[in-house]
Length: 159
Image 1 (tube, rainbow, N blue to C red):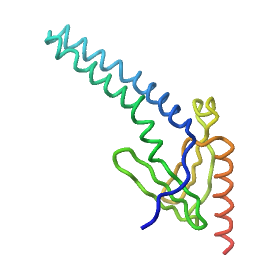
Image 2 (image 1 turned 90 degrees about the vertical axis):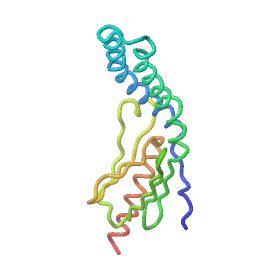
Image 3 (image 1 turned 135 degrees about the vertical axis):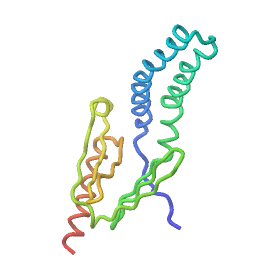
Protein backbone atom coordinates (compact mmCIF):
# COMPACT_ATOMS: atom_id res chain seq x y z
CA UNK A 1 0.00 0.00 0.00
CA UNK A 2 1.22 3.46 -0.91
CA UNK A 3 2.05 6.02 1.73
CA UNK A 4 0.18 9.32 1.68
CA UNK A 5 1.71 12.15 -0.35
CA UNK A 6 4.19 14.23 1.66
CA UNK A 7 3.59 17.83 0.57
CA UNK A 8 1.03 20.07 2.28
CA UNK A 9 -0.70 23.19 1.07
CA UNK A 10 0.32 26.58 2.43
CA UNK A 11 -1.20 27.12 5.91
CA UNK A 12 -2.82 30.30 4.56
CA UNK A 13 -5.17 27.98 2.64
CA UNK A 14 -7.24 27.74 5.83
CA UNK A 15 -7.70 31.51 5.88
CA UNK A 16 -8.51 31.54 2.15
CA UNK A 17 -11.19 28.87 2.63
CA UNK A 18 -12.58 30.74 5.67
CA UNK A 19 -13.02 33.88 3.54
CA UNK A 20 -14.63 31.83 0.75
CA UNK A 21 -16.90 30.17 3.33
CA UNK A 22 -17.91 33.57 4.71
CA UNK A 23 -18.77 34.80 1.22
CA UNK A 24 -20.85 31.68 0.55
CA UNK A 25 -22.56 32.09 3.93
CA UNK A 26 -23.39 35.70 3.14
CA UNK A 27 -25.15 34.62 -0.05
CA UNK A 28 -27.05 31.93 1.85
CA UNK A 29 -28.24 34.45 4.44
CA UNK A 30 -30.79 36.03 2.08
CA UNK A 31 -32.82 32.83 1.45
CA UNK A 32 -32.61 31.91 5.15
CA UNK A 33 -33.89 35.34 6.17
CA UNK A 34 -36.61 35.17 3.52
CA UNK A 35 -37.74 31.76 4.75
CA UNK A 36 -37.80 33.01 8.34
CA UNK A 37 -39.90 36.03 7.37
CA UNK A 38 -42.24 33.87 5.29
CA UNK A 39 -42.75 31.39 8.13
CA UNK A 40 -43.26 34.06 10.77
CA UNK A 41 -45.35 36.62 8.80
CA UNK A 42 -47.20 34.70 6.09
CA UNK A 43 -47.66 31.26 7.62
CA UNK A 44 -47.66 32.65 11.17
CA UNK A 45 -45.69 29.63 12.35
CA UNK A 46 -44.59 29.43 15.98
CA UNK A 47 -41.35 31.25 16.73
CA UNK A 48 -39.34 28.05 17.18
CA UNK A 49 -40.35 26.88 13.67
CA UNK A 50 -39.81 30.27 12.08
CA UNK A 51 -36.30 30.37 13.57
CA UNK A 52 -35.26 27.04 11.98
CA UNK A 53 -34.00 28.50 8.66
CA UNK A 54 -31.86 31.00 10.56
CA UNK A 55 -30.49 28.30 12.84
CA UNK A 56 -29.75 26.08 9.86
CA UNK A 57 -27.96 28.99 8.18
CA UNK A 58 -25.92 29.57 11.35
CA UNK A 59 -24.92 25.90 11.46
CA UNK A 60 -23.85 25.93 7.81
CA UNK A 61 -21.92 29.19 8.31
CA UNK A 62 -20.06 27.77 11.33
CA UNK A 63 -19.18 24.63 9.36
CA UNK A 64 -18.03 26.57 6.29
CA UNK A 65 -16.05 29.22 8.17
CA UNK A 66 -14.75 27.52 11.31
CA UNK A 67 -14.71 23.74 10.87
CA UNK A 68 -14.26 22.73 7.22
CA UNK A 69 -11.16 24.82 6.36
CA UNK A 70 -9.00 23.20 9.05
CA UNK A 71 -10.16 19.68 8.24
CA UNK A 72 -9.80 20.30 4.52
CA UNK A 73 -6.26 21.61 4.97
CA UNK A 74 -5.24 18.70 7.18
CA UNK A 75 -6.40 16.18 4.55
CA UNK A 76 -5.01 17.88 1.43
CA UNK A 77 -1.68 16.41 0.30
CA UNK A 78 0.22 16.24 -2.96
CA UNK A 79 3.48 14.90 -4.27
CA UNK A 80 5.25 15.32 -7.61
CA UNK A 81 6.91 12.01 -8.45
CA UNK A 82 9.08 11.11 -11.46
CA UNK A 83 6.19 9.47 -13.35
CA UNK A 84 3.01 10.85 -11.76
CA UNK A 85 1.38 13.47 -9.58
CA UNK A 86 -0.22 12.05 -6.42
CA UNK A 87 -3.14 14.04 -4.99
CA UNK A 88 -5.11 13.32 -1.81
CA UNK A 89 -8.05 15.45 -0.67
CA UNK A 90 -11.50 15.37 0.89
CA UNK A 91 -13.33 16.08 4.12
CA UNK A 92 -15.89 13.30 4.54
CA UNK A 93 -14.75 11.20 1.62
CA UNK A 94 -11.02 11.01 0.91
CA UNK A 95 -10.12 10.99 -2.80
CA UNK A 96 -6.72 9.81 -4.00
CA UNK A 97 -5.79 10.63 -7.59
CA UNK A 98 -2.69 9.49 -9.45
CA UNK A 99 -2.14 11.46 -12.65
CA UNK A 100 0.48 9.97 -14.99
CA UNK A 101 2.82 12.70 -16.22
CA UNK A 102 2.74 11.11 -19.68
CA UNK A 103 -0.92 12.23 -19.85
CA UNK A 104 -0.34 15.87 -18.84
CA UNK A 105 -0.92 18.20 -21.80
CA UNK A 106 -0.14 21.55 -20.18
CA UNK A 107 0.15 23.19 -16.79
CA UNK A 108 -0.83 26.66 -15.49
CA UNK A 109 -0.74 28.72 -12.34
CA UNK A 110 -3.92 30.62 -11.52
CA UNK A 111 -4.88 33.28 -8.99
CA UNK A 112 -8.26 34.67 -8.12
CA UNK A 113 -8.52 38.08 -6.46
CA UNK A 114 -8.68 36.66 -2.92
CA UNK A 115 -5.72 34.35 -3.57
CA UNK A 116 -3.73 37.22 -5.07
CA UNK A 117 -4.38 39.35 -1.99
CA UNK A 118 -3.13 36.55 0.23
CA UNK A 119 -0.04 35.75 -1.87
CA UNK A 120 -1.37 32.35 -2.96
CA UNK A 121 -1.83 30.62 -6.31
CA UNK A 122 -3.13 27.32 -7.63
CA UNK A 123 -1.41 24.95 -10.04
CA UNK A 124 -3.71 23.45 -12.65
CA UNK A 125 -2.53 20.69 -14.95
CA UNK A 126 -4.63 19.34 -17.77
CA UNK A 127 -5.06 15.89 -19.26
CA UNK A 128 -7.54 14.64 -21.85
CA UNK A 129 -9.76 13.65 -18.89
CA UNK A 130 -9.86 17.25 -17.62
CA UNK A 131 -8.10 19.57 -15.19
CA UNK A 132 -6.49 18.68 -11.86
CA UNK A 133 -5.76 21.36 -9.29
CA UNK A 134 -3.33 21.85 -6.44
CA UNK A 135 -4.84 24.85 -4.64
CA UNK A 136 -3.51 27.46 -2.26
CA UNK A 137 0.26 27.33 -2.60
CA UNK A 138 2.57 30.26 -1.93
CA UNK A 139 3.16 32.00 -5.28
CA UNK A 140 6.83 31.02 -5.41
CA UNK A 141 6.01 27.40 -4.51
CA UNK A 142 3.24 27.31 -7.15
CA UNK A 143 5.75 28.47 -9.76
CA UNK A 144 8.20 25.76 -8.66
CA UNK A 145 5.51 23.05 -8.78
CA UNK A 146 4.32 24.24 -12.21
CA UNK A 147 7.87 24.26 -13.56
CA UNK A 148 8.63 20.82 -12.07
CA UNK A 149 5.54 19.26 -13.65
CA UNK A 150 6.33 20.91 -16.99
CA UNK A 151 9.94 19.71 -16.81
CA UNK A 152 8.96 16.12 -15.99
CA UNK A 153 6.32 16.19 -18.74
CA UNK A 154 8.96 17.25 -21.31
CA UNK A 155 11.29 14.48 -20.10
CA UNK A 156 8.47 11.92 -20.54
CA UNK A 157 7.81 13.23 -24.10
CA UNK A 158 11.48 12.78 -25.03
CA UNK A 159 11.58 9.11 -24.02
